[in-house]
Amino acid sequence: MIKTRYIIFITLLTLLLYPNLTFSAPVDDIRPLKGPVDIEEKALIWPIILLILLSIVGSAVFSYFKKKKHIDEIAAVPPRPPEEIAMEKLKSLLEERLAEKGMMKEYYSKLSDIIREFIEGRYKIIALDKTTWELYQEMRSKKVSRLHVDKIKDFLEDCDLVKFAKYIPTQKEAVDVYNKAKEIVELV
Image 1 (cartoon, rainbow, N blue to C red):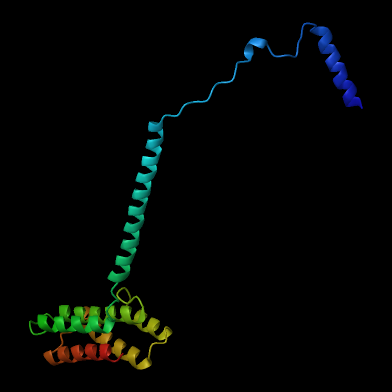
Image 2: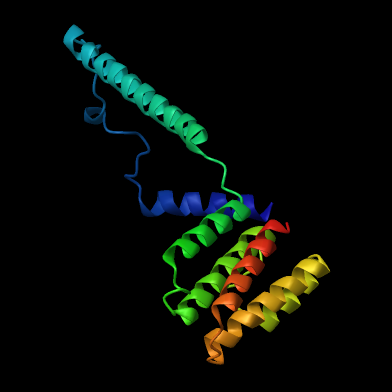
């Protein structure tokens, strides 16, 4: 009720203060309606051409990615087993004849690396960056066969003697350690 009285009061006050105030729009502001716009037939051709080109490009891109996916599926070759890789590397090492040349440290280092890479591939344990003891502990915690873990530990300790303790093995020991490595790979 008070609001209505307030609005009436403001309206009356406005009319008293501004007697010439009108609430209609000026007549010269109104314009007539415009007629329809003629569309030329040539103007319709360009959007159609653009639509056709976009659909061709879209189809080409779609088929390219579909083919690429299909090629990737075909090209995926299953990985070679770690045993096969290790045996190949062992044969290659034997052909280098490092032990016969007296390069025992290099021979033992390469043998150790081959077996450590085999362990990484076979048991998914990071072996190249660990000491023999750390690797032994991790293999035990991963529930690897006790026989296999012990053979690997003995083999790596023999390699460590030559690599770090400057032990110089005989030719017979070099052949024996090679056979141990081969036995570790074949034991799987």
